Picture 1 (cartoon, rainbow, N blue to C red):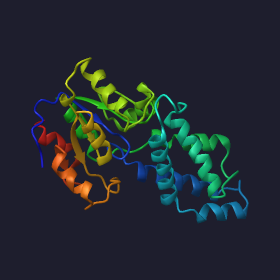
Picture 2 (picture 1 turned 90 degrees about the vertical axis):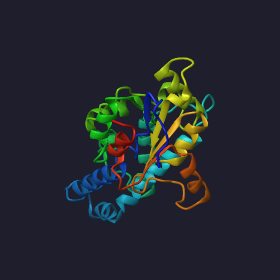
Picture 3 (picture 1 turned 120 degrees about the vertical axis):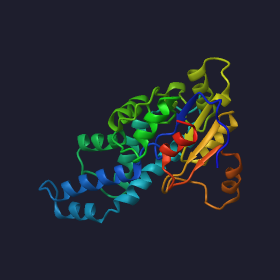
Length: 262
């Protein structure tokens, strides 16, 4: 399904899960580092057994869930500012403790592992699709990730975003209206038409919030990314208000480019 977006001048992109496949990237690094540590001589048998027993895909999901709770609990102007790198580090330390892995990794190893979020692989269609879209539209990140994180992901994946924007720019996190309003002004200047910007995301909650601020919406399904229950009333309602809906097997950003005439 697609509506007329011929007036759109700029596209803002959610990043985690929409542009990059955080799940496989994070799980692979966790598994690799645990395997290396478990086969080294640095640990005793008990610590090695604990490492081997961890369900690393589930651990990665817990880490991601902690991020969701963090950004949704942040209140601009009230909550003390903490960027996503700091959150990822703090939540990793907490998770390692929850899984009884204190002391297994050194402080330097934990710090480096917490930065895996700077090295997330793009979905197969992301790089080429973004390059196509960037030939016609201003393409910009609009993510809760801090600026250095987003800059690293852009370079790591060869994404070629024309502008990097982060919730950090406004000391707020999506779905705060401050982020969407700030993005429109940053892209189009004061008084810019909000409907000239479209939000691209794999999460209907993000798009619902963007739509509430007047942005157009492009939904790109990604495996295991949707938080809304498929078939629920709000999910079915979204099929009416989403402007462009690309199903999981339809080609991702390449299909977005095709529908937008690129």
